[in-house]
Image (tube, rainbow, N blue to C red; front, side, top):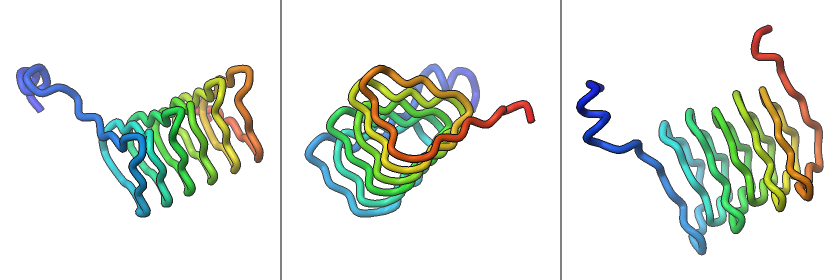
Amino acid sequence: MAREDRERYPKVVDIISKNTKVSATITTPNDIRIDGIINGDVTTAQRLVIGPSAVIKGDVSAAEVDCYGKIEGNLTVKGLLELKEHASIHGSIKTGLLVVEQGAIIRGECTMENREE
């Protein structure tokens, strides 16, 4: 995309709003914010924000994740995973970098991989 096109069109962010329930596999090349309930896997090549009201029952794969909500499934993050105060993960985590705020819950195995190997 040409520079002037990037300036004219803002970055796309997909949004699943609060009180929305989706039973499907979600795959997107864009950033995505989820505030609703997802029954299925979520995959993005970009950033994923899981809001405080969000529940994902399925596996998650993303470049970066900010988690304020709940995931019941395995989580794979290429870069930075930030688990905020009320985040809850019930499943295995595989990430490059990890930040866990006090109060976040992890029930499962966590593996951090050195990105230089």
